[in-house]
Image 1 (spheres, chains in turn purple, orange):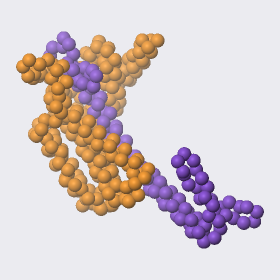
Image 2 (cartoon, helix red, strand yellow; image 1 turned 90 degrees about the horizontal axis):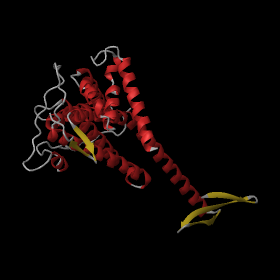
Image 3 (cartoon, helix red, strand yellow; image 1 turned 135 degrees about the horizontal axis):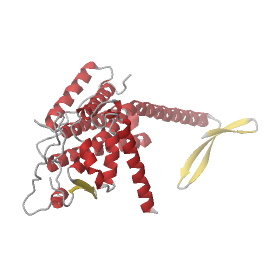
Image 4 (spheres, each protein chain N blue to C red; image 1 turned 135 degrees about the vertical axis):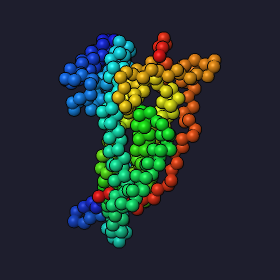
Length: 103
Length: 236
């Protein structure tokens, strides 16, 4: 998807995927080429705007998610400490009573 | 080679645990800024997790009533809730107040009449996960570009992750309620670690079997989604 210069003239080529290969489609330099170039530019701008919006949302999410993860980590420590101290152990994804533990 | 690596790791964790305790002039008495972190407890848990059961007495000692620890984590929970309320509510004060009330309702419904401190914290985590999920769902609903393509895939992964975290928290709550670990700390200072409650087992089943047959939710605590609509996606 680009203007290519041949000599003193510019021609527009569009890339299109056919199966595993990418082929260049010649569109010339007339009205069709101008229209295709404008559409491609608009699509690129739209994609870039969406990426920018996504980056902005990620930035907004960063602080609350970091706090949520910290909260999870702290609770996990307290949970594990409580369970181990109470005679449980974590085995294969489950909390099980330690053999021989009497409370 | 693997055993040597485990030994080295155990030595490192043990050293860190000792250093953290040595750094605190009051030991475990709960004074000083470093006692507001869980690092010494974390280090001891790690050692016990690796099979070093000789550290169990230290673990029990560290779990003796420490209201400052629970206060710290409780404050973190409130901070987390506030962060989500600010993000979701944006400039809409009415929405923010509604979210705070919603959190309070969830807290009351999920925690029940007399929750243990650990249960209260897990409920706080569930509230945070719930808000996270609500925000992501609202994002998708209000933005066309998030309904298709790579951005949508990325968002879906985030939503699935948030949903998994919410389910994990709910499962943890059910486990804590069912297993009722005997040394659950009471936030109020007590002279000694509370005596263990007898583990209630159905007749004919072992502890391991009952643990393995956990069904999860107790049943009477339901997470009711009231279906929030957000007036603005962005928060300045």
